[in-house]
Length: 280
Length: 185
Ligand code: SF4
Image (tube, rainbow over the protein chains, first blue to last red):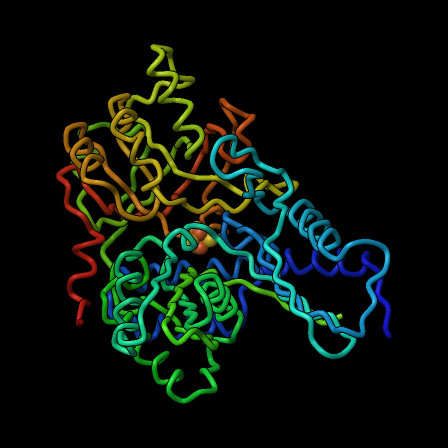
């Protein structure tokens, strides 16, 4: 049995919140540069130049890539042989988010109650925390700050088995066409297929953590990722004002489902596809 | 890309009506930031017959909620927010004399109608280019509703703020015009 103190978790989360806000992952940066090379629209190229320059300034000056530093989604893998000492794991994570968002001059964008008061909690907590128990004695923390310009365009469709691959393609494209220029494209599209309604949404969020250069291990899903990316880049949406670089990647995660169902969830992320990872 | 057009605030109706969808502009002068909560408070004040904290005549509104400024900087990262969330309030605000709006994303037909009537222009700044855009902001000063935090009404002094005319005062929409040649579905 290995022991770690909650303070260590809080500190790690605080640092990760800042890192994620300032440093665009290298794979996303490279994908933007590649998009700039192939973009056919002159206005689109101008937009991509600004986005690339933006990432460079943010990195060089430790500035948030986007003013929407997001609601913090945290994916935890907790080794079952790990003992966490000094307080609750969730409290430690939230303390880290509060510390990171305050120290890092990040925007606090969370309201305590969604409908009536909408009062800002002033420290970006609570985070959305997903916890999974795994073998071993390590704690893996992945952070995905999610901006809501793109989150508001995400959606879910409960298909039936007869809808098949064509149904999935249509569902995803309907969501993308409806989102159009709004989620700050070029987008990164996370697709979750299977599970229950909520689990599919979870898969679609997890899919955004996978590097854009890595395709699904299952060849048929990998093909579907490619086909969807190709279709999205033919919509004309482009980098916000029209063009050929509408999305940088489509990442699919899938899981077992019920004999009667085929849930398809799409989390749309903007070009500011931010995340950070640490293993304690 | 064609030459960028320099515009300075205040933006008159005449100057606004000259701008065409697809034009790239660099804006200098004072612009005012306001987003969801500030719009709600302002339209409620108007409904009660009260005066607004500033005269919006010939002004440009920027839909923005910046990150806090680091010490030594006038402002934090400050890219545009989704303009569509302001649509419910926009016709009322345009009646106050606003001639320019900066945001990102599409607008409702009622907004476009009101823009035509009032001679207003809708500009898009690049969504997410918030660190880059902050370089063009020289000063940020909260004018009203400080209790709204990043949603407060503020004056920004800008120099060569980069934007693109997406919907002009005739209702031409560059989101549609710009996408069409590349749609191959
Ligand atoms: S959608 Fe993304 S890039 Fe656009 S404003 Fe939101 S977080 Fe920023």
